Length: 253
Ligand SMILES: Nc1ncnc2c1ncn2[C@@H]1O[C@H](COP(=O)(O)OP(=O)(O)OP(=O)(O)O)[C@@H](O)[C@H]1O
Ligand SMILES: [Mg+2]
Image (cartoon, rainbow, N blue to C red; front, side):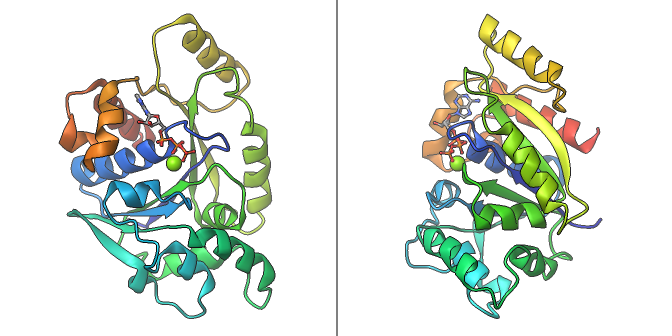
């Protein structure tokens, strides 16, 4: 199959972008025998920290985006899970974002897309965990992406920023005509009125929505401390079952 790149994005913080990126990636590896590359695109480095690979010194996404001629292989690391590799991020991403803007001698939006072309025979999926931002590294992620997935936590501010992401997808289609808004999915779902009504409202607004909702469970908070994806740490938990269902729904199974 040809490699597919998926951006997990929402301009809001704390909606489960990172948790979703990790568990969608690992589910693709274990349940569907896919070869997956995770990309941490957040200077907080939460995904990198999860796998014990956060390092303020080592080369990662920042260098891949800014150092001329840097080989993508020099920034790909093993996660410790067979079939799942990672490109890490750290605070250097702040500087990298400024550098991309200043250095006009290289194309600014298509850098990641070009680098990923080098690994297209080696991975089935690239999953990008984006920062709650629309900076140049996020633009690069969108330009490199085939599909965009938006995790949504239902609260008063759930709708904020969705329009901007859609506008950005539109803008990016100038560089990447393949980009597709695959849909939103509800995270941290609880069976209560707010969640029920919020989810319905999203559907009424005409946003493409996945039927699968990721239920809220303390197992997810625990998982973030263990360095183990849900399929390893708590495979019978509601959220794990839901991520498996979400991936199936995404794959059209
Ligand atoms: N299904 C769930 N049930 C319970 N807690 C969850 C669930 N999903 C995510 N969380 C918790 O929500 C918090 C935010 O998750 P996460 O870090 O993945 O969000 P994020 O969107 O990546 O945040 P940021 O914008 O800071 O990068 C974490 O503490 C996580 O444990
Ligand atoms: Mg995150």
